[in-house]
Image (cartoon, rainbow, N blue to C red; front, side):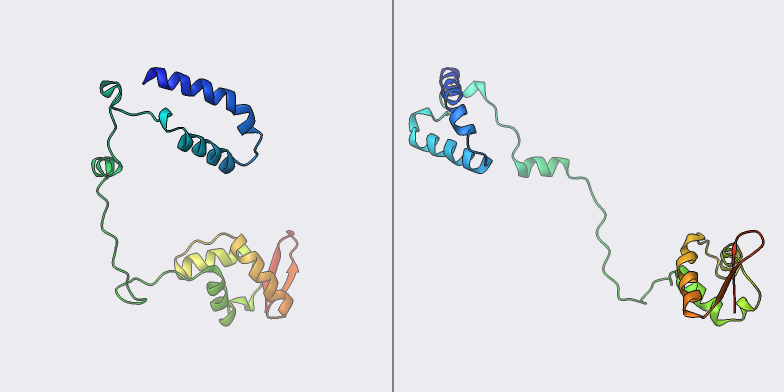
Length: 156
C-alpha cells in the first residue's frame, strides 16, 4: 500500500501544475476523479495491508456515543393558553402615558423612564423613548422644548 501511495503521490505532483491552472475547485476535483476512474490499477485497497488501517467509528456509531440527552421540545402552545402576559414595549407604555393626563406637566425622558418603572414595573432605557417621543412631537400629539438644563421636555 505504501508503494502505491508513493507512486500516486509522485504522479499527482506531476499533474498538479496542469490541474491547478483550472480556477474552479469543482473542475479540478472532477479531473482528478476522471483520472482515478481511468486508472483502475491505482486504487488503494485495504486488502494489501489490513493491519495498517483501522477504520474509525461510522457516523451512526459516533452519533450514538456522543449524543447528549437534550430535553424534549416543548409542545407549541396557542397564544394566550397557559402563558403569562409579557410586558408591553416602550412604545405601548408611552402610548398609555400619552392617553392619560401624565403629560399635563412638562416631563423629561428620565421622568418617563421612572414613571414606567413605578407604574408598569419595567425598566426601559431612555433611548427606547427618544425616537417615539420625537415622532409624537412632529405629529403634534406632544409639544417639545428645551429646558434651562439643556434637556428636552415633553408636554401636551
